[in-house]
Length: 267
Image (tube, rainbow, N blue to C red):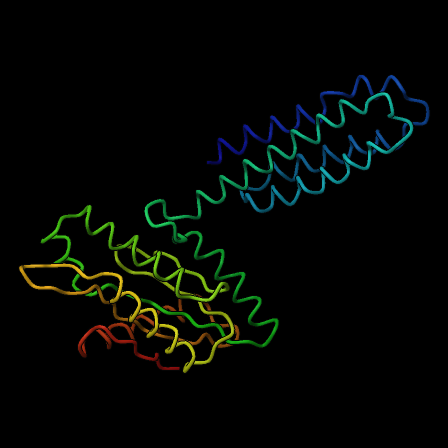
């Protein structure tokens, strides 16, 4: 990914600087265009020093804004087509980076966030919760008897069970809620601005909807897919590892006491 981003960086710099000849031919005072190219070099240096796609996109937004501002300067009127072309290329590069960021943060099989995506979205939601003095529900769920499903029906069917869980979750949860695949058959769900009672209600609703949408037959017995869950509320300033550890302990309790249930985590 780093190599691809560096190649895109170089491409952007060539595109932005592709028309300096045309612009300089208009030079009289030309302070605006000279400042523009100097500033672009500064942005290029910032891009070289970061591996964050989010930061690169932020810098490209600034470059694009300044490029558009250059279009309306009388002193570069003759270079309008070149500047417009630069705008289009910057927009294209930004779009490609956003797509790349999405691929890097998404579990390709289920469409949920992956671990990297979870880390980023947790930071964002935790910061928002602290800023607004709100709670953040952190739920760790684990599909029950998943090994038996894989052994009896095969791994492709097991994969379809994981995909179905994410599909049902996205249909059941609120638009602001987040689903991430934590690993294997474990998933993390983030519920912004909830208290424990509401979080448990949401997870119980998801359990019921999954049962309705996952009837299958194993060893000549009709059964449904279920999951166990540990439900934690993040404390102000609490680190991701800490709150997930509390949710994991509650999940263990749910598994140990009969599965297909959600247990609140200890504070």
